[in-house]
Length: 89
Image (cartoon, rainbow, N blue to C red):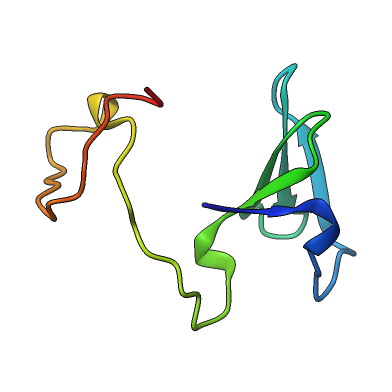
């Protein structure tokens, strides 16, 4: 995911966007038609995290580290040389 200030978000169509309060501290944005996870935002903050797979190419996004590898399944191999973190640390 990548983040953007809320005032910089521009949607092609917000007609099917549904926000769900997933915890006391966060909301998640989904497509109301297909259920795809699109956004995540901390409640009360002025930024929204955007699911990278929803962006048009070229994204100019690059991986910098892997997080939560302590929770990955045993069939995942992460061997790209990037730093690995068990959680947010």
